[in-house]
Length: 154
Image (cartoon, rainbow, N blue to C red; front, side, top):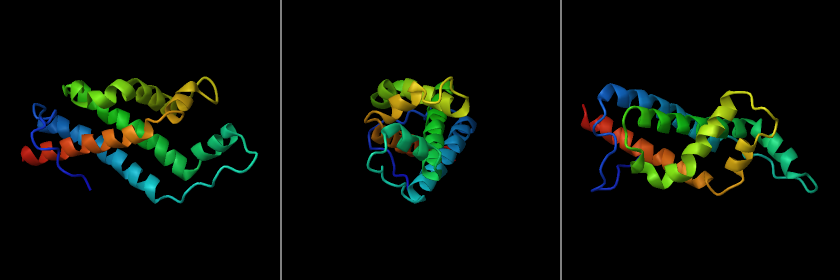
C-alpha cells in the first residue's frame, strides 16, 4: 500500500496534466505488480559451498525471482524517464537520481536489448552495490506522488 507524501513536501507532478500522470502511473502500476511478484516468489536457493559468484548470479537472474527483479527495476527507470519527459523536475528525486538514473537506464537497456557480452558490466554495477534499497525507496516515492496527484486532479 502506498502512503501519502510527507506534509509540506511539494508534489513534483502537480503541474503535469492528468492524462500524462495516468500514462506514468500505468508504468508505475506495472512496476508495482512486478515488485509484488518478486516478493511473493519463492526465495532463491543459497549460494552453494564452492560455487562461484558468477555461476550463482547466472542461475539467479534467470530464475522467476531474478526475472521479476530485473523487469521491476527496468520499469522503475521507465517511470522515472516518463516523469522527466512529461516535465517533472528531476531535482524532486535528486537523492535517488544522482545515484541511480544512469545506472537504471543502462540496466533497463541491458534487460530489453541483447548486451554485447553475457556478463555485461551494467548488471554487475547494479547488483554489486548498495543501491537496491534506494531503488525500492524511489519506487515507493514515485507511487506516493502519482497517487496523490491522481486523487487531487479528480
